[in-house]
Every structure is written in structure tokens, then in C-alpha cells.
Length: 134
Image: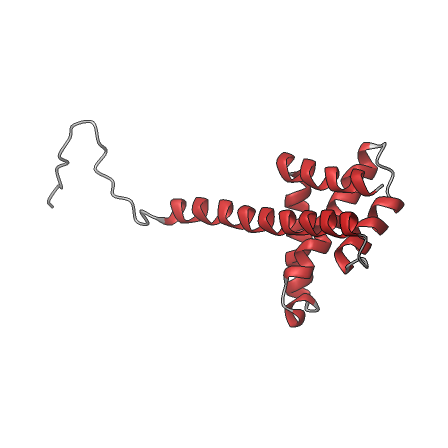
């Protein structure tokens, strides 16, 4: 039986089986968040342009206004529900139509909207948009 000696007496000698596994997961998360953040900024920009120019309302603005007007933004439960519904709308509107209508697409939209509604930064951004529309 042979024993593999390590180069340093402080290291355990164990080699990582998947050296990039953890880092790949960390790299995916922020990219997804930045894509959503870009989508949110785009929607917010559309809301500002539509409101300022007085043009006909687009679908996103109409849906956001519906959510804002039906929400009780004075209660924490109402805020969380409105933010989650808004996030669900944004996520599902960004999915391909065939994926959007599938069970997998619905699960993706539900999971991501739950994540987004709990993220303090994104939660605040969505709530700010809803408050402006109310």
C-alpha cells in the first residue's frame, strides 16, 4: 500500500473531485439576478416613458397598475403578495410562450417569483414601482 504525501504538512491531502462545482453555482446566481434586474429596469423605464409621454398604456403597465390597485400596500402581507404577483408576471412574460404555458414553466415562474419577492433589493425595487402606480 502506498501513501500519497502532500506538499504541505498543513494540507489534508484530499483533492477536490469537482473543483468548479461550487463556483459555477455562485456564478449562475448573480447572472440570473442581473438579468432579472435588467428586465425590471426595462419595465420601470417603460412605465416612466408611458406615463411621461401620455401614450397608450403597454401590457406591463396595465398589469402593474392592476396589481397595485388591487393590493393593500399598507400591510406586510399585502405588500408581499403584490411583489410576488408582480415578480411572477415579469418572469412569466420573459419565458418563451410554449414554456410559459407548460407545467415546468409555471413551476419556474412560481419558484423564481418566490425567490425574488424575498430578496430585499428586488423587493424594494418592485414595491417602489407599485407605490408609484397606486
